Length: 312
Image (tube, rainbow, N blue to C red; front, side, top):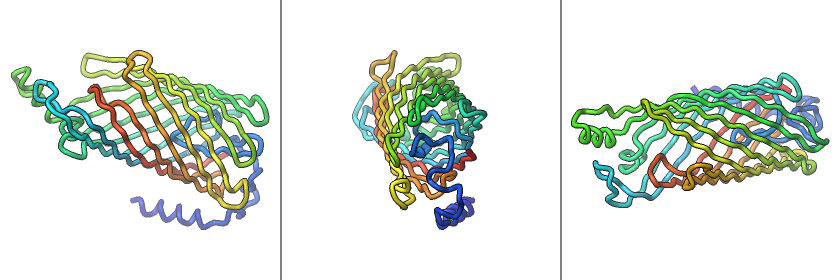
């Protein structure tokens, strides 16, 4: 099923960058500030109201060293936990006006333990998420644009954890199902500032607050975090003739109600920039973040392949 899209992408890459007049570096676009056309990324917020459709496929490998537990939940030893993840994202945005856009996203992912401790501690989990959001954006100067974003994400998670079901069965004296279902709702308001430094160079600075509510059976818990992010991109096409964009980002998240939560993300991306309406790229990231409810932090390395087509 993926061979036909791959062939089409290969054909697009062979097209000359100057095949159409409106592909010139200075052609109008809502993604442009001053002399720089910003490279859109699924992993980084931005204040632009471009109309687009996109598809992204991600793979990740995570690992952590932490305690193993007996059937009573008592720590007994240390082990290496390994996790693998596959995800697929479809998204679209409609730029109703230069200052306003609305968007929809659908995400599906599957993650599982990749070794014995990982399978026992994490099990196999499937996640489905839907999201709706909006952006209000205003240009402050020729090279500055400020946006306010709000996104609401919701959906179920289904997990299979045999070890946990055995523990619960022993504790309750009856057979418990290894399948668990949770429901998550997340509200994320954010402020994003884009700065076109010069031709070929741009930067983004984002501040966002994440409020999440997780429901398990009749119980629920809230998670709140503040995330700070900075991103930079460089387009070699604007500096010369090579249709290659390079982007980097760093972010950190701090819990506002659980002091042990602290997330770090470092990202690096490479993008084809030969067509201003087409974004094709590979985003690599290194992430360190808490895992579940146990006192374990996981380190992960991920790759995200993205294809986006913009209409303005």
